[in-house]
Image 1: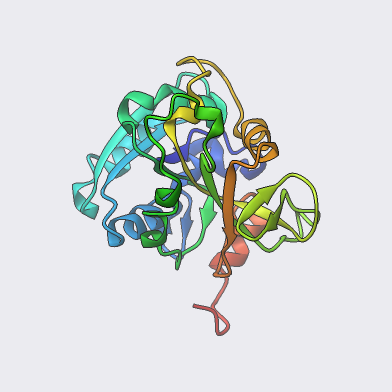
Image 2 (image 1 turned 90 degrees about the vertical axis):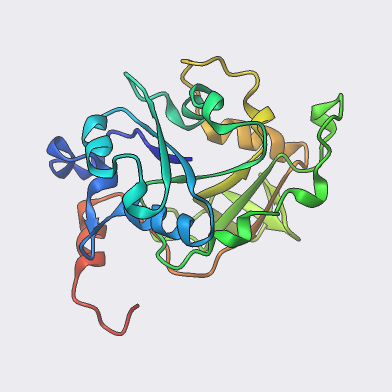
Length: 234
């Protein structure tokens, strides 16, 4: 699932007439970078939620065949936040663990092949006590950027913790078990961070550090930097 429902307030006025996921980095919309990388890893069934100017996203991407993908859309009249967006799209996501990512990050070399089996070793489907499961989510963290110097989570031997050192920033890429969102009703607004912290406190969130190129394209300045002439960067 690709999250594309945000308003992009910090990107205004660019996002007044263009949804943030369609803003271009090096001639290609942000969301298309993700779709191509997912398809390259053999992940072709992709759900996209949208709200602000969502019709433009559907018009630009269509059914996904131009990228070798099969796209489904989950429109939201008003953006429901990340966890709420997942809850609304549950009927499209199935019952197996799924990868989800923010449309407004740029990570051109992320290999989505690595997400396929991260929860497999702890797969205990059928367990009548879901809260006893070891990992219900797997997060990819990055070194803290200048705009988030204190990070979001600590990482201890592939286990995500709310407290401790070293601390890193959540990249916006994660793998989740659908059962995480059972308590959220379709159409309910709900943020993902509190849910992740709840499960992390129970020791049920795993993760690892991603060391490749990654940018949270959250401001016009960061977009300009990405589109500046290359200086040895690939």
